[in-house]
Length: 112
Image 1 (spheres, rainbow, N blue to C red):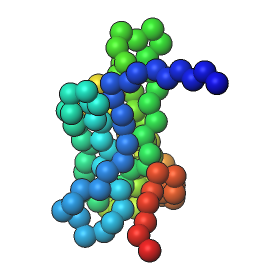
Image 2: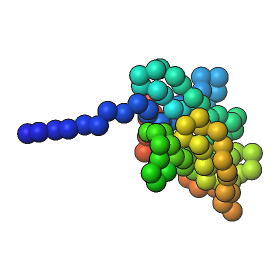
Image 3: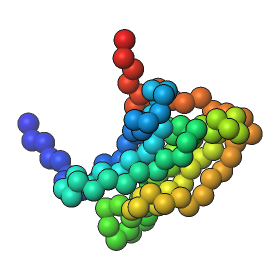
Image 4: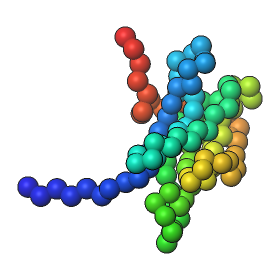
């Protein structure tokens, strides 16, 4: 059986900032697989869902696009759709929902 895989330079995911008391993913991370470079989006009291990469049509590099994540904002007791620049995780925009949206379980791991 023939298998082919594409080589990638970046991975996006969720992380747990160690300084928090609650064990729920609370940061978005981008890791350069070859370089080891790590970029983080973190705001206290905010809990993102698994990041989704959307490439720029005809983009010039592998990380040319945006990251989408639904984030629970505890202070406002609401959720928002977060748009980040995929290359450096700088914030582009937030679109708040009128209610809080449940945090998804996909990508979450819990101890027994």
